[in-house]
Image (cartoon, rainbow, N blue to C red; front, side, top):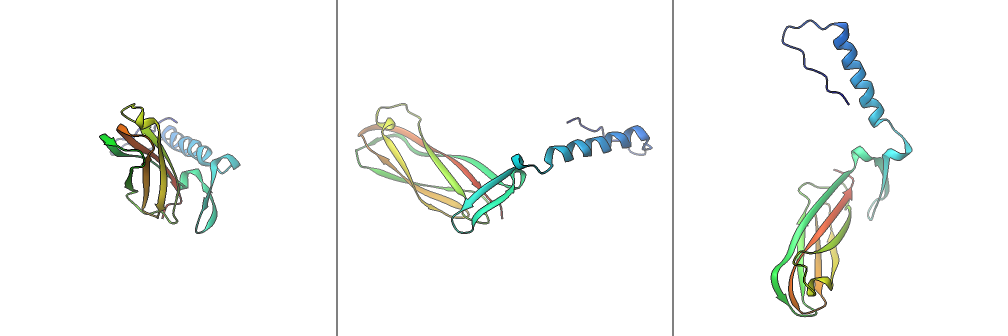
Amino acid sequence: MAKIPLPERGQPLDLSYIYQVANAVNELSAEISPSVYKYVSIDTPSAGKQNLRVSEARVLAGYKSVASNSTVNAGNEKTFDYSFGTDFKYPPIVTATLVNVGNTPAGQNVSVILTSVSTSSVEGIVRFNTSGDVSVGVNLIIVGVPN
């Protein structure tokens, strides 16, 4: 979408400028107009399915370091938490994936479990299934209805 040049102070608004403003508003309206493809359904645990425009949903992507140059034994667990910064209206949908930052063999045999999701944070456990040196983190994708 083209940017509208700002008028100079005291500049008379002519037909050309008004046309540019109206055209930009029409382009913006077409971009956000309702259609079946511009909606998202978020099935919340506490309030059921919520349908809203994609522009009204809140999507966050986060990263949490869990172990950095650590030595672990098989069966060890480390907890993590991640705060969203602002609250969601309902507990959001959270997806967690592990990142083997150190690219170590022990870092390839790790699992993640989310233990708690609230409107403002998520908590989880990383379980190490093999002994060795690890550097791992958790990528988080959080999708929900903003408050």
